[in-house]
Length: 301
Image 1 (cartoon, rainbow, N blue to C red):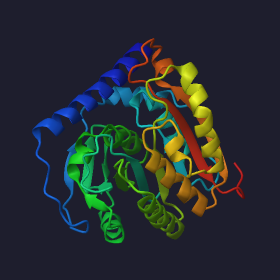
Image 2 (cartoon, rainbow, N blue to C red):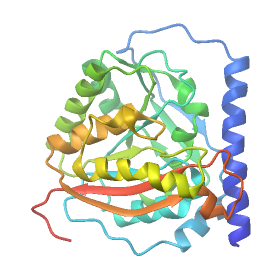
Image 3 (cartoon, one colour):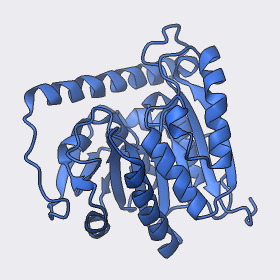
């Protein structure tokens, strides 16, 4: 079962990358539209994650606990870590809505941030976007645009969705993918809007997805990730561009939201490396991962 689980992880990641590159080669860039333009929900199928792969992940859940009042969780989008992602999601109380922020890996978005009105469809269940919340966010955020193409191919969009659907089948999502061109001003503007959304809805959850050290063996990644762990524990947004990770802007926005909500109770549930999970000797396409939750200091587990 473990060998089959590793095989599915590797095949899924390879299929997503090849699909994304093919889409970039054969699909023309859509004309730019106004950020506030209303878009009807589209169906985005997720076909490369077998149901039994999810079943294996949820059967092997780790006994993690999140602090009372947890408002943010940090997960990877590298699906080799499906068991750990599922463990943290399952340990978090069911939210009213999810604000999901992850990188636009291939920088295909029309603006700095992309969102979508969609139903992410998988055999294990569907995830529907919170369309009214998406439209409100578009009106508030000039650097945000509807861009369906980004979500059809990006692994940070497609990977975690079936896990969220399996854990919280009726919870809507506001998905946002960040281009590498995001400016500090845009990061701060988005973080203020998201913090305000979380303040107004105490049951809303911010799910942030970042992968850390890439293409480095575990021994080197562990050294590099010391600075990332320090930044996570201190909610330090200012050092994001100096860390070994795939989405500095996502990390910065996440830390800024945590600061705004005084989420100083930081729990790092695990620190893993894809090569160790797969028992692989090839460090190409490898990543390290943190799994963290953020809650106010005044609460207890």
